[in-house]
Length: 157
Image (cartoon, rainbow, N blue to C red; front, side, top):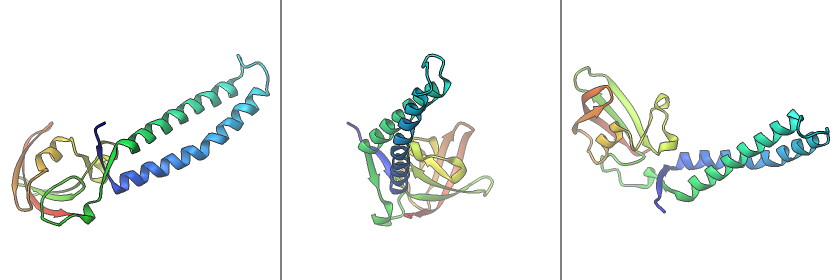
């Protein structure tokens, strides 16, 4: 089984969601029991809705438990700050042409959210940055074209 990289924050978010879903389980069972008491199950919308909610909840629980079982949690705060871009680091880079500054944290697939500045380790930008050092210039092929960046800062936070 191949391990999947995940940040400490990502692991905590999954655990929190799992706790919420596990607390929801008994409530769904009660809703199913109450709906069953209403009579004919073929035409009982409440029963069917509760059963569907139960199926979704159980699928989400299995999905999260699987993700946690294959997660390789990487805590960059405990690593030597060498200025090298690795999984979990936060990278500030400057577009060489426009002088525009970008700041991204390299995270696992499930944690990625570009609006929050978190990019997937498998994204073109992250793949172009991994292994580079603070001060390096990198050329990255993105869906928008080829871009040149200077790595201004690498943070292990």
